[in-house]
Length: 189
Image (cartoon, helix red, strand yellow):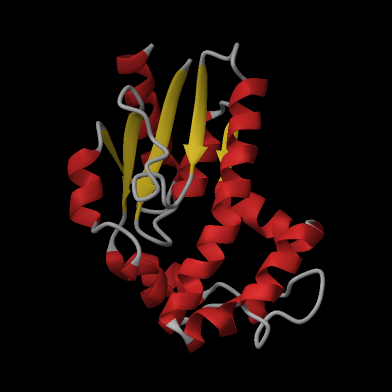
C-alpha cells in the first residue's frame, strides 16, 4: 500500500487536494469533529481537564475555541486527549483499506505527531498567502487568533515543503490541482 500524506498551510486546500486524488482518504479534521459530536468519553475527558470551558455534549466548537484562546496549555491538553483516539481511527482506516493500492492521509499534524512513515509519499499543497487569507475569511467561524495558536504547534511551511516529495500548486482552480495530481500519479504508479 502506498500512503500519500498531504501537507500545507492552514487553508491551503489540503482536503480539496486529498479528495481529488480519488483514493480512500483519512481526514483527521472530519474525524475530530465527529468525536466532538458523538464520543461521550472524549467529552468526559475534556470536561475533566477543561471544566471552565467544556460544558455540554455534543461539544460545541465555540467551547473548544474559547479554551484554546484562553490559555496556550489548553491546546496541548486537547491534543493529548483527542490524538490517541484519532490515531486509533486512522489505524482502523488503514487496516480496512490494507488491500488498496493507495490511501490518502489528510492529517494536519502528520509530521509533528510523527504519524508518517519513512516510505510515505508527502505532497505539499502550495497556495498564495493572500488567496489563503481570502478563503479563510469566508469560513463561518474564521478567527485569526485561533489560526495563530494552531500555527504555533505546527512545523514551518518551509520545513514541510522541504520534507515533501511533490508540490502541488493550488490556485483554487480545479485544473491546477488535477494536473498536479496526474503528474504525481504518473511518477508513483
